[in-house]
Image (cartoon, rainbow, N blue to C red; front, side, top):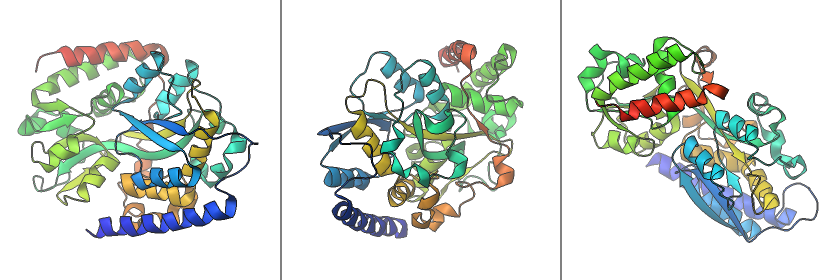
Length: 363
């Protein structure tokens, strides 16, 4: 209850601050010329990934209605755009997917004149390796991929990929393990367990990862990206290949749940705010992105989703329970073991084919 109270109090303060800013600034951030705001903004986002009050505050300040649709993985987002979806103003792809979308010409270039709050970003995120100079994207939230678990079941923290892949260990939890329903994430977990790079293009190494995932199916309850924290809380499973913030958000209501970054390392990722090149209102999208870059707004989203913020000036508004948690903001020795997912280029079809073979194989 303490976390819920802090969240409510914090959002009330944010709303007051926003009202004051709207009066002082005429409801606008930064420059960029006299351009018209649209009546609606269409956001395509991960589920439960933005504080609802933030959307309400944006609507109140700018008079723009936000309509949000959600997707469950990056490939679903990509397929939607490739199929010709033209109605979205802002999308939220992960790092490696930004690279792919840039190569396919799916993203608009950002007008930095409309993004006065870019200077709030931490230097580590101001020149992302997947989009140098933030030409097409702005980092939104970042986190890691590891293992969520029910602490009542384990005497020691399950901080190794062995708990998901070693037959002697994982078989003890047969039918009580979930894996992310995401080709790159699932393959990455297997690759890291095998001691390979998450971005390998070696077909023999990828085949080993595929075979490991097929072997693992005997112990897997489901491939899931949207409900695994609920399954943990309901005692349907005890181990979940998971994104960090999802588990911490669930742990806010169920203290038995916790999250571990495997000692072998894993994925560090950043989700990003981008504008499709078919966006109905690019200017409105940039106003929205600039709004999300305000320190108190970035902090509100971090506090809501339990993910780390790339916004350096947001730190003073972030709940210390989040800011001081090493599984959310890992220390340097842990960070050194983490890898960014990169576009694997011509190897992408190999990943996809092998993932299809995993999904089609029997348990």
